Amino acid sequence: MTRQEIRTILTAPSADALFKEAQAVRLQTKGTGVFLRGLIELSSICLRDCLYCGMRHSNANVRRYALTDDEIVACAALAQTLHFGTVVLQAGENERLWTRERVAHLIHRIKVETGQRVTLSLGERSEADTAAWREAGADRYLLRFETTDRALFAHIHPGAPTTGDHPRIAQLRRMKAQGYEIGSGIMLGIPGQTLDSLIEDLLTFQALQLDMVGLGPYLRHPETPLGQGDQDSEVPVSVDFTCRCYAVARLLLPSANIPSTTALSSLDPEAGRIRGLSSGANVFMPNLTPAYYREGYQIYPGKICVVAPQADSLSALHDTLHSLGLHHIEG
Ligand code: SF4
Image (cartoon, rainbow, N blue to C red; front, side, top):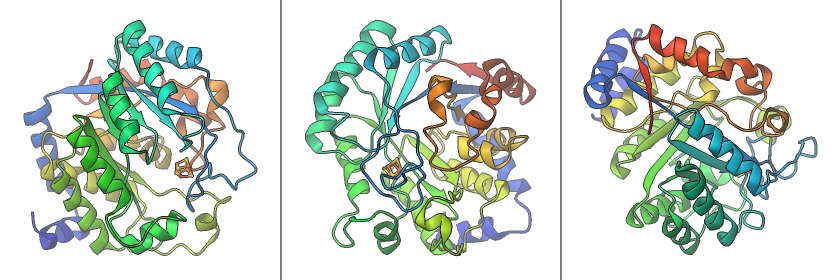
């Protein structure tokens, strides 16, 4: 697909034909199975200060927590009971809390005690860290590069370099060489984002041959610098536009795993999940973090599994899948 073709698709008055085509490709490459992968939010104690994120280090209003290793393994055991097959270990960036040794030990425990595959989402880390974790048995790594626009990336990630390789894209390439399945993604509608840079992002997914693509609408957090500024983006924050991007990602990477994200469900609690799964997505990530911690993990406010924990219930998910002719598969 060319840049112009993507632009035309994203700005056309209707996207019905696009959604149908993406669904057909999804059925051809992934069938009617949907992976449910258990998200475990390890900790809200983050050392970074990303301008868009409610959990940023400088926000004094966050309830900070960190799960113990036993609590994390118990969450993974729940994933095993629910036949998920994979857990996603996600945390605010904190190399002091999530040391190389501790994470390697955790991966080993989860593998041995629960048999779950392990996806890591621990942010920017050294080549030696990710090598050790791969050695310990980690299967996949998610690292959103957020934008290919280097000036915008540096603006929203204080301290990031503006020249040289994009640090996150460089890490994704290193991890692919280490044998990880790699996943990445972006926010849609972040202030300063242009349609041209978004199209470049989508084409970069394809160039990286990602195994997993995560796309979520930017949801403004009032306790962040970006959330307090003027909202100015060429990229709309809407369910329809997010689903168009899912569909384009499906056409660019027919075999990739594409989650219908929590941010999309938070934008439209009634229909977001169904719309996502109807436009090419094939993964859902139920939140397995113990409910009493979830309030502390809010990159944006109004997160669906915090305001309505029952929305994350497995039976509701299964009902949604069945209504769409889909079913849960383990993996
Ligand atoms: S986006 Fe991640 S790394 Fe950045 S402040 Fe939020 S939790 Fe920390």
